[in-house]
Image 1 (cartoon, rainbow, N blue to C red):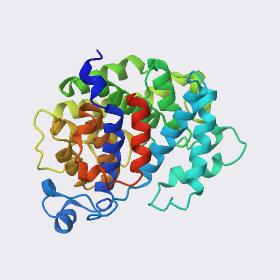
Image 2 (cartoon, rainbow, N blue to C red):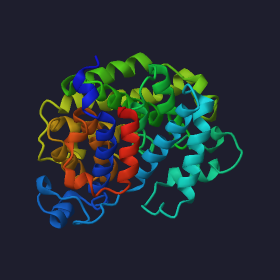
Image 3 (tube, helix red, strand yellow):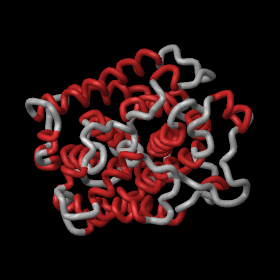
Length: 343
């Protein structure tokens, strides 16, 4: 239910700024184990945003989230959100990112290979890396959960399509769908306590659904016999990790690396689950949540970016310290897009 608090909390701005702050906080800690992070940064609960008083730099996670956001804005400006209206601007944004001199933040191999193939006239399904379920698709999907006025079908289709342009594995599609769904539910005032249950129900309901209109013949590039069995593989992997998350939430110790519970986050379903765990350990302490996410042995920047997106969707723009938000790279664009969808 949409309430006055939902409208005034500036959830879209909170989500985008939170994603970027988590990304920046996890940038220096990615590829390090927890002892090394603690030696470099001190106690995790007191981790500071990098950059001192200067700009806090982000990774390809935020860059690609902004690419998705710009693609969505262009598509919606042209009319009702639909596959053909969305795929061209997304493709253009991804190719522009691929060629950008600022694309120097250790981008994922899958994204680079796929975006290179997208730079041409081939059908996008032929560029998609059908075997990859890396987290590079769901770490950028949060903007799909922020666009107002979408139906469930549009939101799911757009989330899966933006994934499929690079990461065509069914688990990448399902994890992107679930990530966008979580962001959407939190912006609408869903209680964190019931979030995992609602995501599990959503996964069961959509387990055998293939979005033909949005994905075209993507499934035929796999070894699956039908589009339904193609999608079931992805949803089943996401359901398994959500079930594990529901179990560990009862007893998880916040002082233990969250990756110990739900995985290191290099693959899509683990990035979703571990970011949700970090958020749900501290649902009303957003800075603590992204600090915990950044101090992990796994894909720290992506886990923290997703954690920041969930926390910002839940608490809004006021969740983040002003002195941090003012230093984040791409601040102007993050605020412009957030204001567009908060309006």
